[in-house]
Length: 352
Image 1 (cartoon, one colour):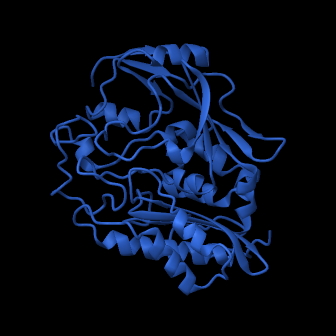
Image 2 (tube, helix red, strand yellow):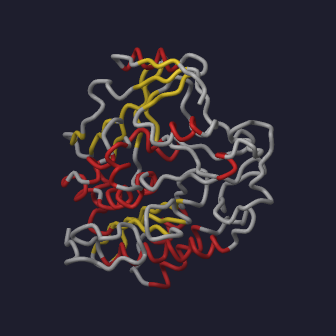
Image 3 (spheres, one colour):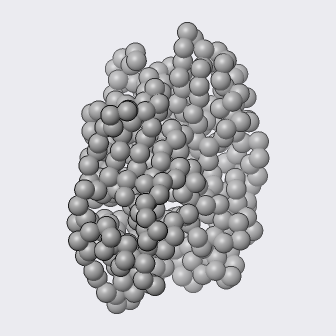
């Protein structure tokens, strides 16, 4: 591992100043960054440890509704917070499906949002990777690419975004609060991550030195709590990254879908929100045929980036099933296998 300087700032302002220096990287739990450093993918000159910054580790319920989650809140604390899990069950289920208890106890909300792709060619410093080394090429094209993108990819990069947490957050309209040299700003989470285009090395919309300080879910997102599910298809029934995943949240009134919120994971370089499919569902009575049509609309622009044609149909079926499970109602507690298609429903359905 390359030698580096280590700094522990006492304030957000000091952290921004330190992180704005060339070659700096922000360190929270390090569950992704340290792996990248050990393999030589990331070689920072300076680590800026933000874990001791004040006032970034709270879960605050807002007077006007909604919740504000500090960037240093641990994933386990958020997933197991009773009020949060009741208001946003699909988010809690996604968190619990995403990693082992040990990792959830360490990993932070802000770090989860900023984790990098798990593409094997990105991790292999002997391979050509435009995300790691701009202009070097993309060995995933023509390589082992069955798990790669089917939406939004480019000739420069076909990697996918790895987070489970981000998928229902994007569906529910989450917002990130960011602080940098130019002050504080906020942006929809759906705009935080970037599609690769010609610059796949730039994962996010953050400027150098900018720091995520909080994540916010709006008040209306809790209105989907009674019909919200996260479904994840993985290559083993354990903690593995999604081949494809889907979040489905419905607001049902008098047996009719008044509003739908959807997102797909494992299909693109960012969580993918299919607005066309949401519009198709609104005002309709839920049934299997409707869910299949919505899934087809969501994947209408999908195309294989290699040996992954199967992912298109898999994504359709995963979304249709997530919709069916959401329409049936949120279970009163998280399944024993969170997010898994092999789970059975425990207990009674919620009625709220």
